[in-house]
Image (cartoon, rainbow, N blue to C red; front, side, top):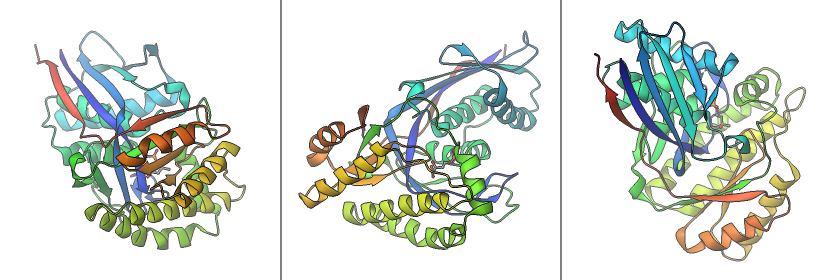
Length: 330
Ligand code: PMV
């Protein structure tokens, strides 16, 4: 029996990934840059076990099948192939944030799974291998393996591998992220479906792809020089351009709810009052606001008081995925 437990944090893209260069190989068409979220963690245990005939998945204590299990099996199969291991695995995964909030993150989930499965199979947990493995399941998960401020490059179709790279560790810059939870439950259109549909039908997709390298570059410069205004402007343009490309798809993909727009208005007002606050939205109605320690309490209370916001979370910058070996081959 071999088992390992890994922990990984969610991340929020400052420069967004939206679009695939290669659907089968899950390679991104655009570069992305993210910050790791210390407060949002997934813990996953993988146990290869000769007493079970099929892979099993427990999500927050509930036996889970269907699409979620198939995605887990696909990752485990890659690890089994590389390690020449044939045992089936029991996978137990839990989030330290409410899964039903719609914040459930495939990034932290597949980063933790990739890390735990690699270690449990007796393979070396080289971050570049684990990031590439996680990327095949969810491109944003590649970034959660590294921690701190992270970049995932775009790739040419058919590229053999692609791993994320760390731009700066968590202690490089004490950036804070205020998260507005604006809905309960899973999002109506998942990110893979949303981006493939945008890619196929949106007249704005090509301009989005053309814009991304410039935005990713601006974000990297802003991180290097710890310039919140430059980071925030690039982050907002990235998010709005991504959502605009999705909204222009046929039929439209609209992730915003009234509370999303209300949060954007609050962020604009905060800025007019001299507060460093900049917003971003992923494939859902929640808003994440980038700010600094001096402003974080004011930003959190103003966002919490914004109509439609259910609750807020506040996060610091988090570190890389970590793993502990629980049992060696016996
Ligand atoms: O990693 P995926 O396939 O769930 O896609 C993530 C897409 C966005 O969250 C919208 C943007 C990003 O870069 O994280």
